[in-house]
Amino acid sequence: MGTSTKIDIVALLISASALYLAISQGFETRESNRISVRPHLDISYLAANGITEPHGFKVDNGGLGPAIIDEMTVFVDGKVAHKEKDKM
Image (cartoon, rainbow, N blue to C red; front, top):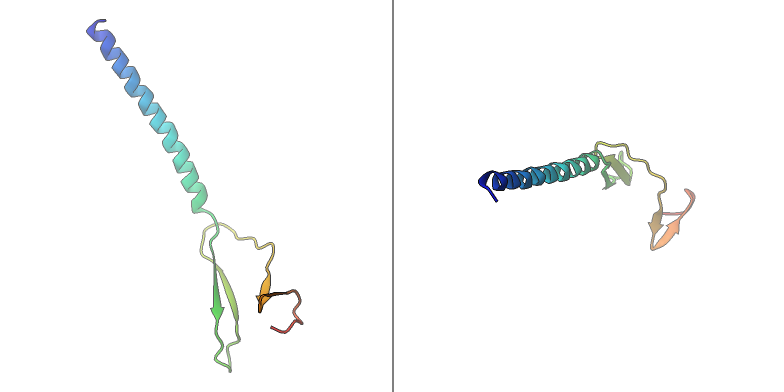
């Protein structure tokens, strides 16, 4: 096996490795971009001062994507409160 054949084989291995790394980096970048536009909901409790501010919860979307809330369940003393008229 001549010197030029060895150089050709090494060049082929290096180029194949570079192609593999480029493709895998593309998949990683795609996944990172997909995750970066996901919604991130922050739920905080609002304490009342008794005069002007009511008790409650505040939901903020800190992410870039739209947040769609399909369902919300409120538990009071370990039981599900289904209706507004339930005492909370």
